[in-house]
Length: 348
Image 1: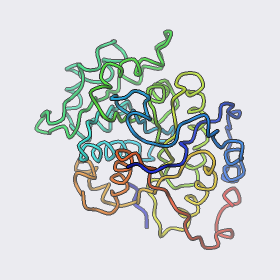
Image 2: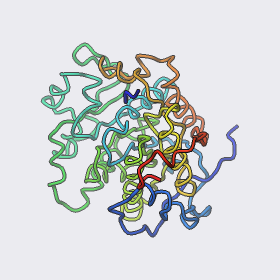
Image 3: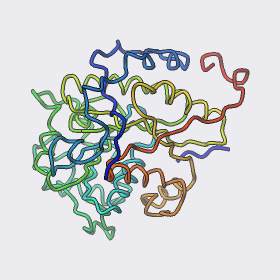
């Protein structure tokens, strides 16, 4: 991560505004605070969606089939891959049947798990590229939990990626946006959760991830410019729900690389909570820590390398809430000092 000096009755899961606003291309921090994202009209209709019960039945509407959760944000470096790996690992540690799909052509999750052997997986035709580009069966490319790849055992079922997947935006054919959703149908009964690590863009692969998902978590780094981009992924999510996947729901906004001792991080967190009030819950932040950097350097999942570290416990809490059918852990407003005289005009 960043280096810097009986189930209870629950609140409704936020639905997506059926009439999205026009795209906003030049957002400022002021516009994020004042934009229509926070208007009361965006609160979800209680009759439009069932209560927030994160179970395999209520999330998918298909008893006995996996809940599909996408990590998505067009912004890079916000912690999508880190969050995908750690959440998948946390779910697996709770005895859940988990499949993680690396849908990012950069194949970072694949490299973390298998290092240089990631290229061998492509040569063996065992990546998601073979499924989406060559119409291969998804079940044929799954690396099973415990399978040894170049002296490294898979911690959960996994499908790797490859740079060739970047060419997918050039492919044009009817219904191609639903290719991943169709491919997953063959294996959903074999899992409790499928986690999709989407790429850092708003292209075809992100549309596919959202089209196949029941839930989307949006990781957002607690920096002003990163927070400004939330409206873009929300607009995309609305469009996917309207055109491709009416069952898609926003599980929450996940602040990442959060330093509670930095005033600007607290400021950003508070604005996210305020702006998302009627849109989606803001999940407990993922703390910034060198624990993540050390794990990445060792090509290990942070929760696996440092399971007792406080900074990774948020992923454990999210996994526990999902499995128990409870609301995800919520962020709380942070105490703020007076910042107005220290921030640039567009931020104030």
